[in-house]
Length: 152
Length: 80
Image 1 (cartoon, rainbow over the protein chains, first blue to last red):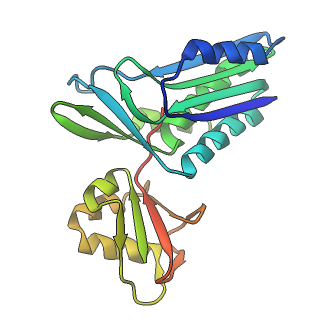
Image 2 (cartoon, each protein chain N blue to C red):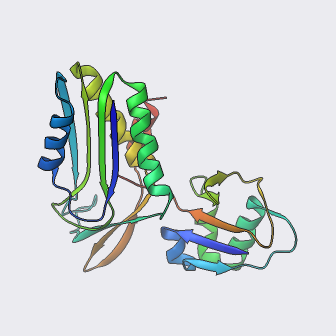
């Protein structure tokens, strides 16, 4: 069983991350991954130049580890890997990589789905969208909270 | 006492405030005191999703703070 939960200041390379997981998960029958990408448009259609993710010096890393460990404990998976950016992220760049490896696909799909619902609503970051027009703080949507509620 | 703000709370009030308190004050009481002194902060500070941290632990609204304590208020988080 391995759990990787990493806060990343530099660009995430999803191909490298999945490569690492595949190597670590030798023998797993199922590997599922998700990449969250910064969109070029806000929810109202206005252009976004970058997303800025502020974090807490101590609590952010701890929240990533807790969420990853919870997924590993709840689902029949052998490996969980979470890599989450902080700082300024340009449109089109990866914000988060979440993945799981298991003997069978159902556990890997569910663990990854669970990871994202938890990360969206509980990972300790503060997100704002920046553009020429200014900056706006972004919070989870009602749908995000409802998705999180599915796992209770 | 020292109060630190994160996220949009920091936009409204600055990252750090030195707040005078008289004797033990609950977190709820501090929220009210800060909201009264900083009207731009009041509505956000009363959001249930805004949590208080002392040291390494999240604390509830009934947690008592002393003049020498340091408390952090975290705005509603958003990851992914």
